[in-house]
Image (tube, rainbow, N blue to C red):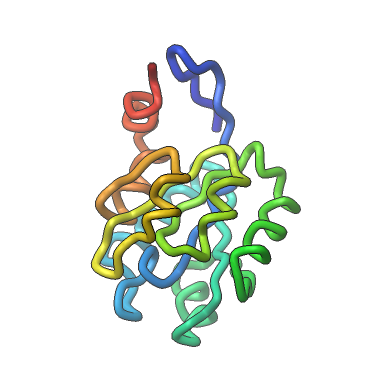
Length: 153
């Protein structure tokens, strides 16, 4: 999807990289409303991929429920390397932990969520946008005017 951002130019996002713990799920449970949004984003043509350290061991189950691909990333460097294989200039990432820091610095657009599991301050300072929940983050791509309003200068 291409966005014309006033004062910034064109932004093209093809892939949305998602974190699991503290982002798609809180306390091991998928955040309500996420499944409908991921389905809508796929219908809009976005590729969705989950990079996770799989702390709770539930990545297979959650990825299957959301019908998205997932990749094991045991650390921040591995998340960065995985993103570099996906044309990072057309990627957005959504996360919250220190494991997401290098990923936020690698992709074109980094978004952090401030849900119950918190956000690491280094990752917060490296992101482009901060939103309260994963649903708010996903809605930025469903309703492009939200994203444009947040990024315009």
